[in-house]
Image 1 (tube, rainbow, N blue to C red):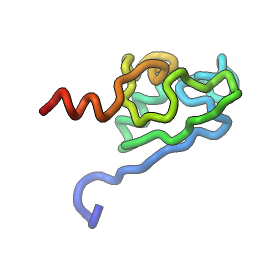
Image 2: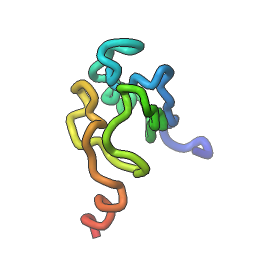
Image 3: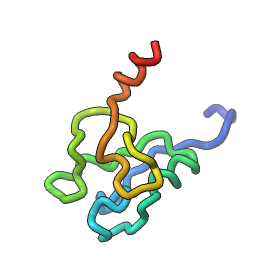
Length: 89
């Protein structure tokens, strides 16, 4: 930002298959969120994808992945960002 620091980006996964969440269709990369994190992605805006099978149970919230970013569908669980900020205070 303003020429300082590393470039960052937001991401939207085509076909709503983020982190291999469509049973191997349209993606096939289990560690995709780790790759995004390492390359400067600060937010994923793929969801909602309902009624597709790739829709995660967490809805209408900004949340942080609750599982290891290296595994399949790490975004299927998580903590609301608001909760994480409150716990740090």
